[in-house]
Length: 125
Image (cartoon, rainbow, N blue to C red; front, side):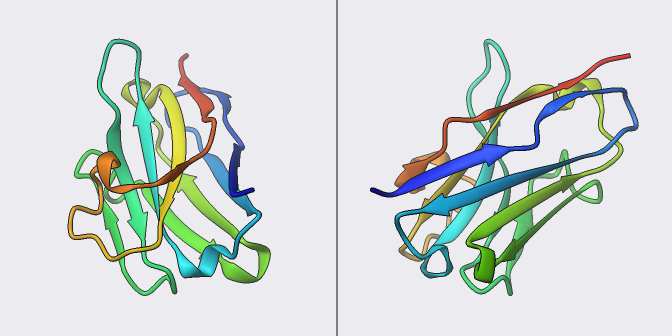
C-alpha cells in the first residue's frame, strides 16, 4: 500500500525554524515527483514547493522563496522541507504529495495522486 507520512510540525515562534519530513512506504519514492502543500483554516490548499524525482529541479511559491528549502534523500525514501524565518502567516497544515508523471503545473495540488495525512505548523509568539 502506497503511503506518505509527514512529521516535524509543531509550534514555533516567529523567526524560528522547523524541518518537515515526508517518508514514503510501499513504493520507491525516487520514481516520483514530490510537492509540499499547505492549507490554513478557511483557505484553499496551496502549493509551497516542488522537487523532481532526482532532485535536480525545485520550485517555490513566491511567499516562501528564500526561506524554505526542499530536498530529498532517495536512499531514505524521504523528502524534506526546511523552513526558516517562519512567519505567523505560515501557520497551516502541511501536506506532502507525490506524482509519477511529468507535470507542468508543479504547485497545483490537482496534479498529485498520493497524499499524506498532514502535519500542523503553528507560528505564534
